[in-house]
Figure 1: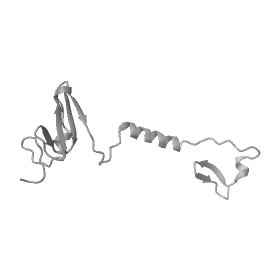
Figure 2: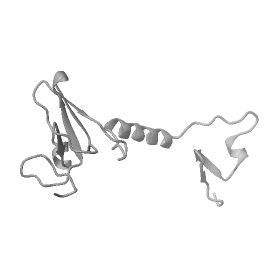
Figure 3: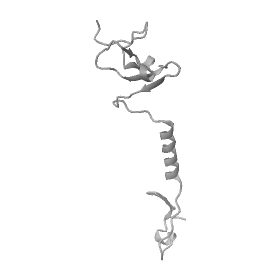
Figure 4: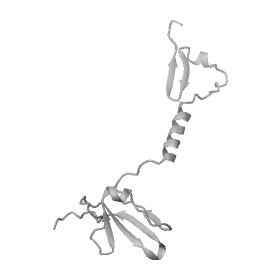
Length: 124
């Protein structure tokens, strides 16, 4: 017998990466990381079958992650990142310090965005 556990699905010989357990009392299918040893009432699934897993009507699927693989960013995470980039790129109005003007402080500096400066050509 091979030391690598195989997918429990019929005619699938791929290596198992997840373990499926049914909790009949709660009508729940729990899909988690591969168990340390094979149990008679659990099913080992390959990556493809674990991703495509659906539960019977009225049942809930609970997917547990082991934390060793990095989580993929959700749509909300990507939208928040895009909003932060837009906010950082938006020019901020600066109020001049009392007693000085922006032009007199640095005649070559035409503008500023965060830590970056826009410089005027010395000829102009």
